[in-house]
Structure formats: C-alpha cells, structure tokens
Image (cartoon, rainbow, N blue to C red):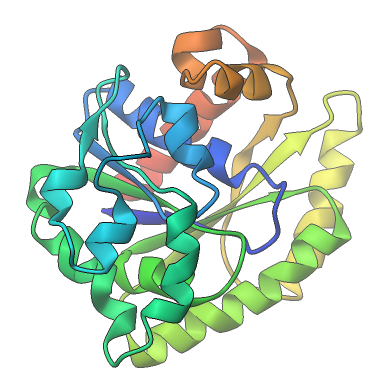
Length: 253
C-alpha cells in the first residue's frame, strides 16, 4: 500500500502524521519506506535523515539518481528518501509530458520490497502533490479543528478527482484524521460539528481516533527523533498508536 499524507493547508500535523505512520508501522514489524516530497524537508529532518550532499528525491525526480541510491535506513527500522529546498525547483523543471508519473516510475522499482510506502506531501496542490497522488493507492488527510482547515479539503477533493480522471483511477481517500485536538475542549461536540462541516465538502470516512495536541511533537522533531523513540508514553504517541491500530483494521478489511 502506498499512502500519500496530504493537506494543502500547513500546520495541520501532516508531517507529524506521516512520520508517526511510518515509524508506528515499522514498530509493528512492517517493512516501511517514507518519502519526503516537501521541499521544506521537515519529514527528513524529523526522521534523522541526512538531506544535503546526498542523493535526494529531487535527483530521483529528475532521473539523475535511482531511488535505491537515495534510500537511507533510520534508527526506527524504516527507510527514508529525503528532500531539501532544491525540490522547490521541480515545479518549474518538471514541465514536460509525463511529469505526473516521475515518482511512480521511480517507486515501482522498489515497491516490492515494502509493505507500506508513506509519502509526505507539500502544503500545496502543485506538480509534487499530483505526483504523490499518481503514485499512491490511498490518501490520508490530517486536519485540525477549524473551519479554514476543513474548507480547504474541498480543493483537495477536486485535485484527487482530477488525478483519478487523468492519471490514477484507482487512488482513493482512505480517511480523514483529526489532529491537534485540545484535550480540555468538548471533544464529542467538536467532532460532531467538524464532521458536519466536512460532509459538505467531501465523502470520506473520518477516523474515530483523534490526535491530541502536545509539545512533545515539536520536541521530538527538534531532537531529530521519531515520536515513539522520543516520547513513547506521551498522550500523542498513544493517540497515534491507537490511530495505526484503527488504520490497519481498515486496510485488512
């Protein structure tokens, strides 16, 4: 399964979710590859990957390096293809026909080595995100509690429909995950309101697990450690473990 973690709005826990999914699946014994497709490179940094003076996803997309050359092994037992700011140039450089399929072509050569491939996408709906959706079997949408975060999902849904039509008919939205919840708020009421808001924009299942807010996320990223190694007993780590259990139940159906 190839999962693109996407939301064109920043600050919704997208990279945290991508990293927690990769690390959490690896913790359960699955073979996992994480691909950083965001020029900010936060996924790479948080995983502890080296993303300068080494082959990155940018070279892979340009066909200047094979994906095997760019793969790095992480302490958490999963592999990562890193990214850095050079990837920002890909929007302009990948202008020729077939540009939407560059990542899919590269990933196809190693996909058989992994149970799950997790792609962290940039907070935009340009050529990089379209590459992720063209490559993916499933899309996971993290979103925060807020009308602006949920409203953006309608644009995301339109992009998915376009990719389904022109590039990858099989890709589907696996589900929506609520992140950065305030534990003191009335969760059930918030969930109900958000579900109603979202149903106006998109018909996709919403995970029952929600991720509470916590400072350990920023601390773990600053220490270049995955959440489970850094703060395995924190509420955020517990929430992500519960989410992965729910995610896997959906996959096994």
